[in-house]
Amino acid sequence: MSLPLWERPIAIAEALMAKHTVKLAPEPAGEREGLVIVSHAVQSDAVQAQSGSASDSVTDVFASSRDSVDRSDPSATSPITLVTVGDSLTVGCGVASQSEELTPSMAHALAAKVGRPVRWATHGKLGATMRRVRFRLLPEVTESPDLLVLCAGSNDLMARRSMKEWRADLTAAIDEAKALCPHVVVISSGQVYRSPALGRTLRKAILDMTDAQTAVSREICAAKQVTFVDMTHYDTGLTDAEFWADDDFHPSKRCYQLLANGVIEQSAPDLLDFAKQA
Image (cartoon, rainbow, N blue to C red; front, side):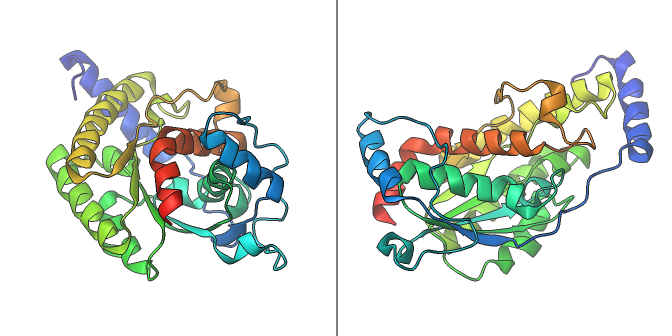
């Protein structure tokens, strides 16, 4: 923590207060897997987009619901498989249904980007650290997906786990993820440092820790040759009232959609190459 000495007791007091005052949204009900279908028109647009000649719009691009499949559509027989493993962001805390959380939103954005159906699944837990991802959640993945996304880190910060511990856990989690899938994406911690539920000095301390963790994550991902997506300071364009769910700690439905779009946008060059291989 790089806070001045006189601010550190304030941050500690605010952290103790937050334990008693912050009421986290639970994991919402709903299926944790589904299928996104794209229309033939969108498939054509996606091909053009790879050469830079199509619109980025994803409005009304899906020909079917994310949990059903049109068997008459030959493209539905070869979906890209997307699996996310991680913390509360991967299980939609803050929204009403699993269908509104990060993973299906990423599946929609990915399907629109590459013009192919995407079958998605999520394995997550509210409060999960990267160590839990490594030892408890990754072993739940029994298939070999085309794309595997690791999304954790905020709980490591809140638990004051050291950067040495973070380095060890993230490195091991990446190694185990790569054993399941050659295409791995790591998403940075979210924007907890902005949470209105936390005190100002505590938010300042969390920002310092988040930036340090993000730097370590970027270094590890570069060494491991996996895609790193920095969402720490990603600008959704939302006001605080629009950004946060009712618990003032997790993203709103609209925020999940924009964060998912941001992940796909930042991964776009790698994802386009990957989609050709999948």
